[in-house]
Image 1: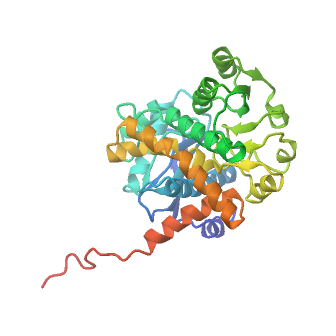
Image 2: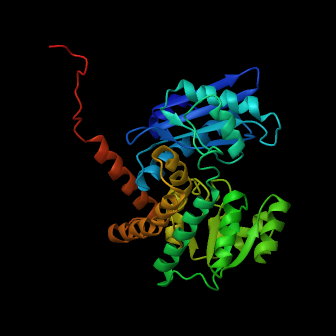
Image 3: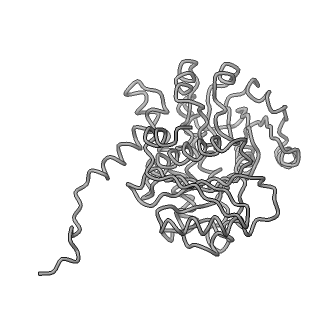
Length: 358
């Protein structure tokens, strides 16, 4: 990867490569934009095949957080961190304390949180070294249930847009990924009367959801081709691509995974096929809303009410897309960019020379 060219093209402010020999920690912290506030985004722990793959993930995810936080109406910029390694390791304290020290060295420009491969307990280790962390056990904790509720509301909004009713009774939803968020979402969809088809790499996760919801199970690669009303990606990104989009037999795509479109043109491909796409960072903003509550002192009830607003936000994105004849992913970007540009263009009213005498 040509790092400086890529960073300039994607609009990043800062990317930090971190290493701690004693713990074996190798991490990347990417800060995309701090116009609206400190860059907040989770820490992903993943066994990347190459360092370039890890860097690409950090860059894409951090940019996504800028847009997610802007559309959600939060006073936060976008950032993300990744740790390279086996997330099944038991040697977690030293790894995450090392991560905390590097986060702390940025002086609050980046605030970390839980993400794929990390836990509330990991964030507690980070908290031993820095105050710039959210989602710790003594505060908001695991944001998965709030994330799932926001995605559920996005699915309801998508149903209303497509079918004129947000009822999910009797609708078939194909869920890819049954981790923390996917599990909570499956339960909420089941309670709403939806029929579920599920897949995951972990047999234990599958069984837990099947026992709770009576879901049907398909192999990993077959989830794209099942006949359903809604496809709900809740695993890793890039799953909407040249190979998978032609297989889809659904009318709606709405899920919790970040960066679902491998490339922007795949949003155009969904549009061309007449598939309604709820932009991922709009649908899955419940998690960042939950951890934002730690910074603002919001109650859990207020966080859930804010996550409920994802319903109206998704509908407003659909309306803008229809009014301007652009795909929904471009409409979501436009909403985010309008807020960022508006704040960036505000006149600074604080003293320019606060220490000036006379």
